[in-house]
View 1 (tube, rainbow, N blue to C red):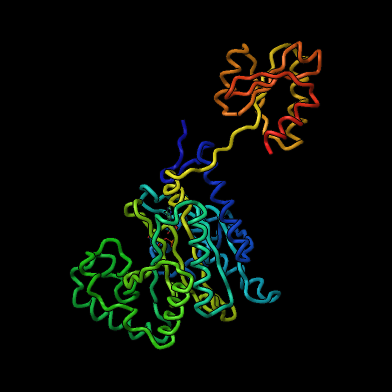
View 2: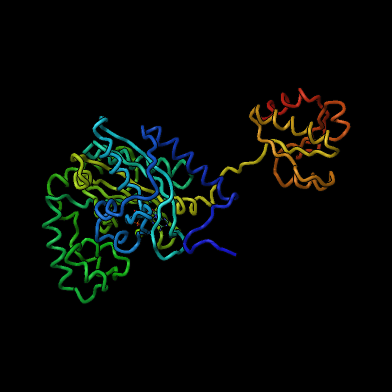
Amino acid sequence: MIQTVRGVRDIPPEESAGWLFLEEQARRIFQQYGYRELRTPIFERVELFARAVGETSDIVEKEMYLFQDRGGETLCLRPEGTASAVRSFIETSRHRSLPWRVFYMGPMFRYERPQKGRYRQFHQIGCELFGPAGPLADAEMMALVLRLLEAIGIGSAVTLEINSLGCPVCRGPYRERLTAHLHERRTQLCGNCQRRLERNPLRVLDCKEEDPALLHEVPRMLDHVCDGCQEHFAGLTGHLTDLQLPFRINPFMVRGLDYYHRTAFEAIATGLGAQNAVAAGGRYDGLVAEMGGVSTPAVGFAMGMERLLLLMEEQRIPVVRPDLYLVVAGDRMVDGYGLQLAEQWRRAGLRVEMHLSGGSMKSQMKHAGRSLAPVTALIGTQETAEQTVTLKWMESGVQESLSAERVLERLLQTNA
Ligand code: ATP
Ligand code: MG
């Protein structure tokens, strides 16, 4: 018996209705805000992520799925979506005007320790907006995230947290201040952080190994941002207040990726334990230029679909059930008559589940009951000879005999 690989899982048919519902709500809401779908490859050159996500990020240091193809090139299963969106933006930007609004959804791959809400293949939905530099764009994006969380029924289970990570003007001086502070406490840091203290001290703030008390007393970026960043942040909180979107300023949020500028935000859920971030994003104004494009401000977010579905589990996800279950009891003629009717009803738009494996009327009716279809169509030798159908309404048990033509009319009527 060959089993699935550690950290990955099937999405069984019983769960897929929830996934479809989530995807449909996301598409609907993204369209309301003017986003169109971008589909990028599942694998890319490893340099793309090394440069975009950052050499010192957890993702690049230890989570990437790397492989060599038969031509000897080192490729990587995508661990996140922004790098590919930026690559695509740069590759095609000559033919396009701004702003460029795109969304994506699909699997991502990270070699992590699997646990509840953390897998090695997981799925993200995300949006990227290229062009606008002001806080209006950040606020609109947060509104979009909250609208989606509301639409899937978990709006009240989630808190929006925001922070500013500064910009190239103010981050340098802050970094020095932070490095000095952490240097004095060097021995209290985990091995990994001691090593990367010089290269990227901000990373320490995001490390899950560190003592929270130690992190609590470090200098805060928000207290050291420049005037431009201060103004941007004030603009953002102003817009959020105008929209009456509840938010919390979290000066300790740094985000795991290197590319953020100014705004960072997360949607935090209660009740998911340590894996409590369902959506995360921010502004990455420097990234397009860093990746070789013409400098373009941008803002984006990604949400983890597994974590959203864990939260949605208690909510009501619509169940997909057939409109009609079809039972045929008789010979080949009866089967043929039933099959033709089923096709006709499906062409008219009905969900028809036909019983295909024979058996007594009694056992077929048992399957009909399990299908949750509100009505069962019964076809035997008599119905076939008379070109009629017997309908049985499952809740009341009432039966009626109709001509084949009238059945469709009757079903569409009750479905309307
Ligand atoms: P975490 O701090 O939980 O590791 P992250 O900062 O690595 O999250 P991002 O790279 O910002 O996460 O990804 C955005 C979202 O994708 C997360 O908020 C989370 O919902 C989801 N996500 C990230 N990694 C995983 C994973 N291994 N399994 C399931 N969902 C994940
Ligand atoms: Mg992570």
